[in-house]
Amino acid sequence: MVIPISSIELRAHPETPRTAAPAVARPARPSGRVLLRACRPRQWAKNVLLVAAPAAGGVLGDGSVALRVVLAIASFCMLSSATYLLNDVRDREQDRLHPRKQRRPIASGALSVRAALVMALALALAGLGLAAAIRLEFAAVGAGYLLLTAVYSVWLRHVVLLDILAIAGAFVIRAAAGGVATSVPLSRWFLVVTSCGALFIVAGKRHAELFGADGDPSTRTTLRLYSEGALRLIMASAVGGMLVAYAIWAFRRPERGPWYEATIVPVLLWLGRYWQLVARGAGEAPEELILRDPPLLAISLLWTALFIGGIYVGR
Image (tube, rainbow, N blue to C red; front, side, top):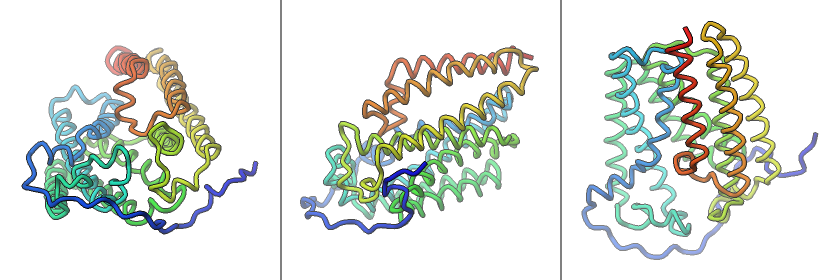
């Protein structure tokens, strides 16, 4: 099947000339609230993915493991905030032209570039230090996360398809990091499911940025190279791969009774609901969409209950 779109072309594109952004007043000393907003605490919800591997391994009941998971999440919150600060420094001129992103502290001038860079460095060092205290291998994963996000910010974000794969890779690193921090082996099915799920979410995010109500593709040259058909094809392929891998994993755990098999139903419902919301133009902020949509939240809770049943009851 040939897709007659230019979005599959793997090549870098320089930013197009833009009109001058409005002048921004020199910021005063930033308040704690401004610093916290610049760290994007709403996006810390993504780091809950570190719970996935130890939860699937059924080891969260161990107090020492639970403590390592909490500390690992705290470490990745610091590392991810460091990357957000660097990204916002680099994108400040573009963000000032965006209807929503112009309110970010760096773009609005509430936080200076120098203060943002100093805080990013401090958070990166603190996050890596905490990661090393948990486990040296976990610190290596954290460093890999920082490297991937830095390369994305500088180069990969301007290359079609690679920008999606890079963001999806950051999600997969989070999921794998939880296993590394707690010494839980990662199965191939776990990695396939998380990889396909991340690809689905990121393609939906790109779809919302292009075709959503608040989308503004004019501020990102790469976005204009994607078509709706290409993004939906990526989403469909990711959903198919995720469902097959998840079903194989669930049915290969007969010792847990019907619990894991039953979780396939909420997975199907969740993916269907999320796709429906993406088709309506939602999905630009996945972490907010999942928490604010009642059906998605209810399905997530149902899956969690069945999954916990498989861990602690189906033995």
